[in-house]
Image (cartoon, rainbow over the protein chains, first blue to last red):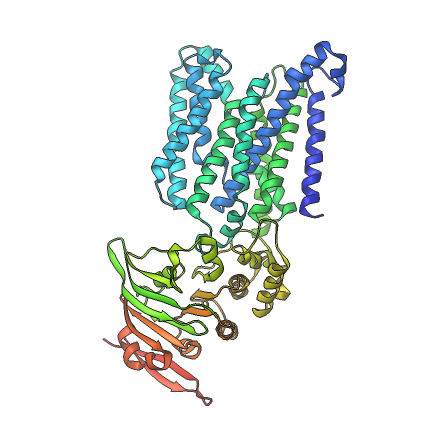
Length: 322
Length: 259
């Protein structure tokens, strides 16, 4: 099977999963129930469809962001959260919850996006014109630890126990009750970020040979660095704004894709986006049909899935080292 | 025919320490130029200036009449191929894919062309790695990896080929093979610049030699005139023994340190 066929297969699987996701939930629906009009049409169009679209967009964004980050840092354990942009976005959202601005549906995602943008600006200030990867990673760590601790501070200073619960719950990430307004905000930004990152494929390939060789073949490392930051920032910022923090997707998906797509970083990008979308749509359908009293948070479901995944990875490495 | 590479008064400081001081030389295409000098003499820094990857504090490197730093990056990538000192392979890709990366400065938007594929095959054949084409590069021996990385540079068919210690980690047979490939590249018209530590190999492969000492150009010119016991004694602080094999090839062996 060549790359095009594999990606086609993933795309078909994604479409099927999205149809399935329209049916999944407390009320079981046929995806063609819209023709009845009335209540089922409302559930389908106003609840399930935006949620499914968001899950696909966010999954694709996080999968792609993870594949780009791993290729750029040449480290298979790199994660889109590493730059600190996702925790800056989370801090923005938490601030809006803390001060009770979240009453208006639009304010929380806008605060999150402002947080992500400020995070990227701080990163730019810290790194300056340097092209050093270590400096860059360190700047990301500084940003992540600062915003992480400020988020914890906001939680501890929350005015009421209700606000605390609201913040903690939001941080866990979910797609419950998302509307078209959320989708309209996030999807274009994710599309823009994806477009920016799609152009990095060949430079990431060249980095397989290290920075010196890549530069000697015409790769502009400084430009690549900012493409990666802005692209990953848009993807991660938009997805945190719409769904809170959903971990592990960006970390796991490129690993799942590599045995099939090969290890060349540029070849991993598109299948990672497709597989990320597929994974998140399926996981979000799963949390809806599980017989729990309140819906299992998607962020928690993903971390639960992450543990056995890394355990399997560890077992394989142990076998190879033995 | 390739253009000449002109090094025009190149000086460079790193962290306040002068690394290169006013280096001027003219490098000729179709010849192998070897850069020699003790550790820290500035060889690798000079090579990265030649590749257009480092901005000299003053002076310039020109290809034809154009400063290499002013060239479009991709165009420069097509004209100057660099094999860095440190062999880096970061992902578990197969040999053919890795060699194919060398075509990057040539690649159009729509995937590899016939010319790309032909260049990749030629490069693999020239370095004797064709049989390894489907193997994972990371699981090869150090020597095999060295040849694959040389094939990567050759695949780009650069007019100027720069190699920083390409013999490190190769066994004697493969060292001779790599030197032959470099000679061949020069014979076919390319300019070849190699940093070497082994004086005997240097004497055999070099048409011309540049000897650096603490960032200064100690000697330059046709190799026979430069690789003399007097110059080497000053450059490395060692006394060398010069001999010849039965067929007249030079042997240069360091014998003792000069106090």
